[in-house]
Image 1 (tube, helix red, strand yellow):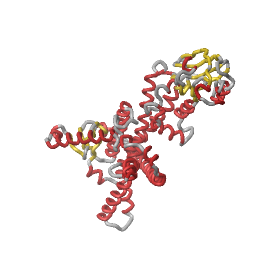
Image 2 (cartoon, one colour):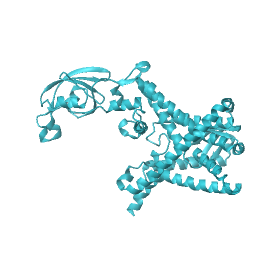
Image 3 (tube, one colour):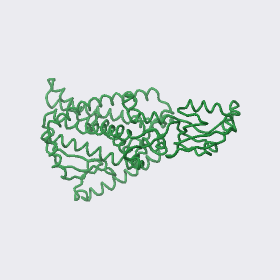
Image 4 (cartoon, helix red, strand yellow):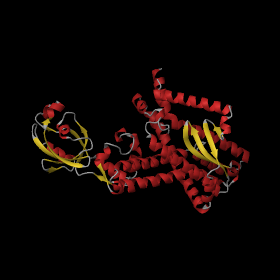
Length: 454
């Protein structure tokens, strides 16, 4: 059976398309300067054209930016295509029912806040607006700097606003030098890469740079119900600093102290919790009561799962390049791990392990909201840049590949009409192939159980 979220999504899209088609036939959209572009609504305006024209005067900079973007886009294109091919091979050679069940559902791959549970609505909407507006404005500025007129700007909507667009004069764009046209196509993803890098630097050096571990010791990641730890007030996010006068610096220190205790022993514990250092006494339980293991009879039991993982996490967040490339991969994969809570890099109760210094010391809630927002700006800009670099029409990478292929064919004794025909057929085939590789995990997710059942 299809998941209920997919059913809701299909119903929502059907209602949207029905309403849009009705409004279009009644000419209501046209009266409000709205047109259809496939299933998308294009809300056009001429506001912003003067700003684009002013910024495009720095032609030398935009030429350099465009050339750099072309190189970055092709490198990204190669890397992502290789990754997609590897994914296809790996899934095909390791396919099992268990692996298929772990593949993401369709709602997990749609960049739609509220539909995709991976994306926190508020942060995602702001991050998408920033990503798409800068992406499209970069296209427009690059086009204008190459002598192409801008016809209009506007908003692109599919159920909700999903982006912005800048509409250049297509005839002029087709007639300009190939290298200039490739700069125009590459400038959008290049701007997203640039914003992603700047956001990462702000996130790691400025924001996380003002965060420290709240106290020396070991963190509490879990409390056993009705255990001595719960009785003394330990909680997720607490940090045990000292037990019976012995400083606890790491897990080994904690185990060493606890292995010397016995059931019924009264111990003194100093711990950090919610900004305060607390000292308390508690009587240890019998470990056997909780584990039912004969070797644990008579041994002291506090009732926590200890961790120092937050120390390693903070080190990566402060400097993801320290363990390159693992640090970058780890940072980017953080939202995919439910243990982070709420799919944000750091949320309550994990922030209890940390202390905010400097400007935001008096308002940590604002600080963590800002930190998560900057993280999502980094995350989504990088995702949008990578996706747009794919060699698939109508993505920017597809048009870049189309121009590259056309340029290569010019070196052969082939007439213009034949070149255009070869290019068109090749790009159609390549686009379909890339699209298949992208949706291959979804096809396995929904078709494999049906075929297996048959």
